[in-house]
Structure formats: C-alpha cells, structure tokens
Amino acid sequence: MNDEHLGLLTTKGGTESWPSLLVHADHSVLIFTSVQCPYAIAAYGTIERIAARYSSAPLQFLLINSNVSTDDDPEDLDAMRAHEPQPSIPFLRDETAELARFLGATHTPHVFLLDRDGEKLWSGPIDHRFRKPDDWSEESEGFWPWDDNPPPQLAVTTLEVVLDQLIAIGHIESKEEHPIGCTIK
Picture 1 (cartoon, rainbow, N blue to C red):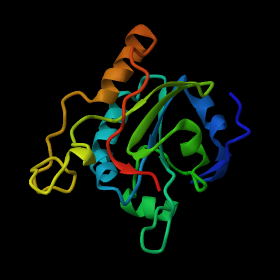
Picture 2: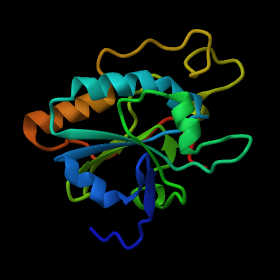
Picture 3: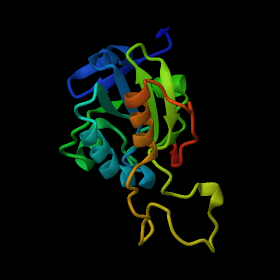
Picture 4: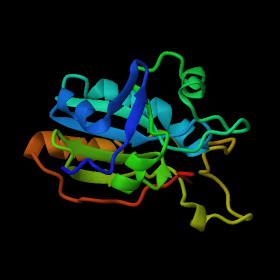
C-alpha cells in the first residue's frame, strides 16, 4: 500500500496514520459516518449490533467522520462524543477527508472492508432499508430515515452477508455496492 497520500486521523488519544490502525486485526471494517446525516444516525444501533455479533472474529470496527465541521453543523470528535457518549466502536476524525478520497467514500454511512495491508475487499451500504434519494418524490411515502415510521431493522444486513462470506470462504463474492445516504461534504 502506498500511503503517501494519506493524512492523520484524530483519535481519542491523539493522531495516528490510518495504516497503523489496520494492524490490530486481520480485517478492518471502516464505516464513514456523520452526526448530522439521518441515514448515518439511523444506522448507529445496527452498527453496534453487528460489531457485537462479530466481536470474537478477527475484525475491528472503526467509525470515521470525514465531513467538514462548522459551527452550525459540528462534525468534530466532541460532537461525535456528544451524540454517542459510550460508543463501543472507536470514532476517528478524518479532518482533511484524505482517507475518504483515497478509498472513494462518497456517502454516510459507507462501509469499507480492508485486509491488514489496507487492500479493499469490499465497499457498500450497511443495508438496503432506505430508498435512494433519486427514488424519492413528494408523493412518495416511507423509508427515509426521518420518517415517522422508519423501515424495520433487517434480520440480516448486507454487511453481515459480506462478513459471513469472508469468515466462511475467505473472500468476498462481490467487490462493491453503491451506498445509500448523505454525501460526504
């Protein structure tokens, strides 16, 4: 992996280069997220459940925020901690969005499964519960994350299917799926 293009991620304990974070497990699940995006906010419970389900697997889960932080829309670590005060998954801040650009992250949430060397094995959505914004019109009903009646949690998510494939057969059948969510700004 050539990491000359990559900046540092802000962590609870300071800053680290993201490749140094990958050596802690055989595979890393990087989830680009936001504290402002309703799609990302709706996914936090699902992410926590999935991370707990795979806690004995040689996987690590990392939440990464690459959005621009402003006074009106804070996306910094303090805002992330305020939103999720006791996360079981580490929050990291990609201040310059270099990692997002390098991997091709475009939305929140957007998941990347990487091996220990940083090789991208898969990228895509956590699940397909929500409609794509292009599929929505004023006359449409249901399945925006801020609807009064959000879609039910799926019994098995897209991410779980991918992780089960990796654990069972050692590789992923599909390499990429388009995520659904807010664009990274």
